[in-house]
Image 1 (cartoon, rainbow, N blue to C red):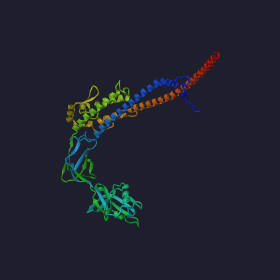
Image 2: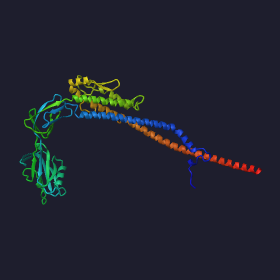
Image 3: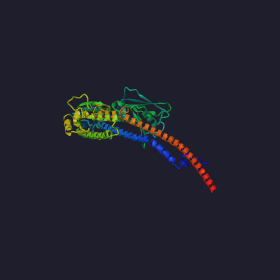
Length: 478
């Protein structure tokens, strides 16, 4: 016989829908608790969303300003009168107001290059033994090295065995040593050549000498140096020669950072007798625009913060980290951004015309900003110097410190987000427990109602039997 569940038979004897009654009683007992938990969970979700908005807002604000400052557009930049010969850029921390110089590029730094004769295949074995690479200075004439003086560094030995004795293997073996000489293979209709190139600078010339294994000769065809006949010197190792304000100096590269304080010189071409004039360009226009952009972005972020922390409608009205962020931002205009400067020059945003309004928003006094830029451009520029990580190290540094404090996982918005998430986890646990309690109560009530329904059914059966007996007795008397 097929079994019948308790819940499906409830009410069969009494006619009462005990199943619906059990569900209604269970729902009524836990409805208030579930409603409160749902409301709390909804509030926590809104708080987590609010925290996420504040974190992303202050982080994006700080990162954007840092990127702008590091880009150099808010600092005085060096200029070159002839970028076809010489390009310039400012080094970190450079102070170039009033900077000027004259530079003559007499010679570019060059690297030695050498190429072997064409070989039929880049994968065919050449020979085995040892290749010795030596750096130093060289004299070259008509593609041949006529003299070489080894430098102070130790020669580099490169073992060539049966596993790497092709052009491809030899090039890989040379490159693996990272000795300042790179190897590549150039192929054309005539065959494949091993091409070697060193670093720039007269002291970076090189020789390559083979010590061959008897019976496996062939590596000497790759020799580079005095008397080598199988290779050709394509370019000669040279130092750059520049004259700064008439003083000639040599450097091993075409990118020079140690001749003029705060300026990197990138040599592009050489022209003896041509003087390149270096000067500087003011970032005043960029600073003015950036100040306006900063204020606009600050006010947009402040609007979001005020909405989230509103005492009546804000989801974060009682959040300590959100309140701390509000206080820190409010102090930004009066924070001393440049430590150690004289009190005569501007050291705060307020000093350059950025004012805090009664509602907490910022505004720019364009007239005051222009006047300060004209009077002390270097001091204004210092407020936007590249110095991130701590308050008192430029505006980017101050804002970065605020962002770091606000998002700190130990005491900032990160803690709030973590607390709200943990609270949601607890609510989920409580909801799960209530679901279990509901199931147990529903089962218990169903069992009790089934017993009641069975008793009622028994009473009805007895009643029907007695009625039948009475009816039968009355019929017999008639």
